[in-house]
Length: 396
Image (cartoon, rainbow, N blue to C red; front, side, top):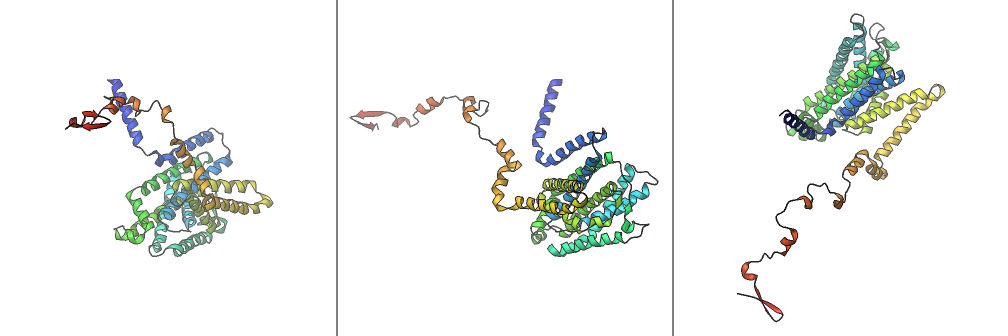
């Protein structure tokens, strides 16, 4: 009885596993496996501080790229102020952490409160910016979001030294480097869970309907105003969380880092990864951040002037490879998904397939094929024939 129960439970588990759409959870599995490997190496002392710093930057870029992909890729609104939302979250969350660390210490509770403060404040700014989005589109909305980013940067730059540090910057507490990137990647998983579940729900279908045709979405009864504000608030919230992580990663915040160029860099991650592709945004964020950090590390002194030149050249080559019509055949032939699909659907000679359950030799039949072909299926009165000469004649 016990063995039967175990077999029934195992069979039920296997049936449930077959029903799961594993392609929806590939990014979770990959990030979780890499997180386990890197965290084990870090906690045992086998990882250098430079690698930990690189992983922190990659996690921050992933959160920024995925959150902006929801706004640009799925809602279809062009935003150039994502660095402004990050700036608000970094300064307000960093200031909250600096105040609470004196009484609560620089622990996880302070970190959590700072995350909520930075994310909520950025979400409020996202709603404020989202209100003009109800009437503006395209270039006009991009100008409004760009103006917001510059205004936010100027406010913190011109603040007093007692409030947000002014032009010298705001000093924030530094979290333990061995565990900060672990918390950052856990927040990446949280961001993926919230945004992917949102996109795959009926609310996500309403958002993509607004992107395809706002007039048709209104005609079908979709509340366009509500969904636009929700997307702006969610995107800004996760940008604020990324800003708080940035404040913990850098002990001094300077508003000049959150300028127009940084917003363009985040937008490039989304565009290179593919509009509306979350996995593509994750990969592009990883590659661009790795390239930036490595170039800044290698090119020092007089060679630092070459950093932007090499970075721009690599981006141009990536864009040409991704969009050139002459390379479309090469991309389709050697794309990883196409290679995997061709490998799975490779043709096999039927004569060599002995384990096929649908093979003719394994199907039980009552009549053999040669017997079936030799049977005359004509009616009884037409079967008998009389030979007269060379011409057969049917009997009446």
